[in-house]
Image (cartoon, rainbow, N blue to C red):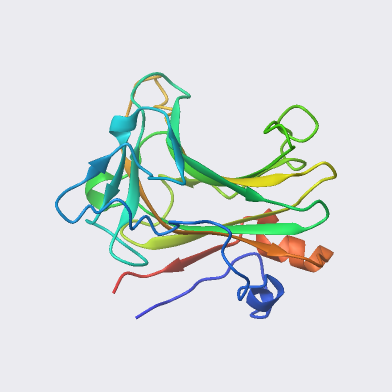
Length: 228
C-alpha cells in the first residue's frame, strides 16, 4: 500500500503542472544495470551515469528497490569532512525551459545516517563547454538542490525528493547529480550511514509559470511512500 504526504500546501494538481507525463531525459534512472542479482557491484552508477568519489562507497544493489529490481547505494566517503560521492548524468537542455528532477531515497534503520551526513539531488545548468552557465556555481541560478535527505528523514521508507529550476540564457545541458556528503558529527569525527537511491528522473516543461516552478521543487517538494 502506498501513502503519499505532500508538503508546502501544494494542491493535487501539482503533478499535472509538473508535466509528469513528459519523457524522462535520463537513462538507467532505476539503476537496473549492471546486474547486481549476484551481489553488490561497486563503482556505481553505471553508464551513462558518471560516478565520482571513492568507487568503493557507491554500489549498484538488489537489496532494496523502489522501481524495478535494483537501486544505487552510497556511503559517506570516509576520507575527510566535506567529502562526497555519487553520480551525475547530463542531457541536452534549452534556455528558458523549466527542468524538474525527482528521485527516491531510503535509509535503513540498521544503517541510518549519523551526525551531519546527508544526501541531495541536484540539477546543474551547463554551457556548451561543459562549465556552469555564468562561469561559477550559483545556487538558485545555475544550481538547484532538493531538500537534504539526512538523519531526520524517515527510516525504512522511500522518500521522494524533488528539485526544479529554470534554465538560464546560455544553457546547453542540464546535469542531474546524486551526492552523499560526509560531514561527520559535532566533534569532527567520521560517522556512518548509507542512502539507497532509485527512480531518478529529469523532465522538461516547455512553458514555465511561477506556480509550476514553485510546485515542482524549488521549495523542496517531498512525498514519501511507505514500504509495502
